Image (cartoon, rainbow, N blue to C red; front, side):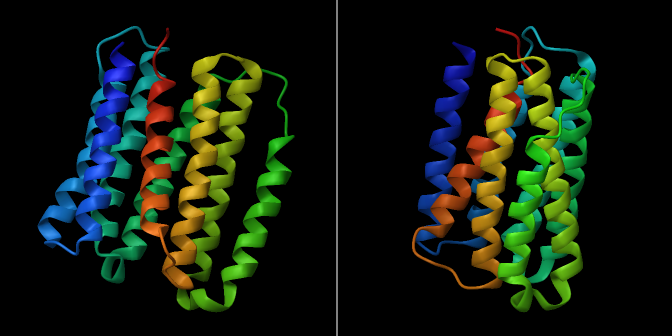
Length: 214
């Protein structure tokens, strides 16, 4: 029941942010509405219910705090894009550590080459448009692919709803960031902000969901 309530609140936060930004309203409101959804997800991750382990919960919460910093930086992506990328880079490191802390043996690499091929294709598609961002964008894409692989390792080791949620969250993160990258480095297209934010909040909520048992 708790997860359903939080999921509905996150949906409302996402709708509020998308509606607010679509009307070209004040920048202060954009900061507030964008941070609200991630803050609610962080509260959900820390909610006092049965959790996988204190280490896992702490690492996921750290990833969400870093993501919240990234959210704030990327409101003004024209000025703070690198800061936002660094915050999310570190968030993915925290998620990788969380997922691998719950993974068992043997290590399986089935997802990694697929993710790597996708990352290479995305960088190739955007390469001529990224200029000074080529190196940081490549590093960010690499850590995002590794995060998805780590989530897949956790799921293959412990196939259950919460680990599947983390894996699905990783994939949705890739969708969100891919659309954001095209919007940032190529050109915005219709509904891109809505796609970016809806998949982003869904990804973060699914990762937070993986903290809870039952």
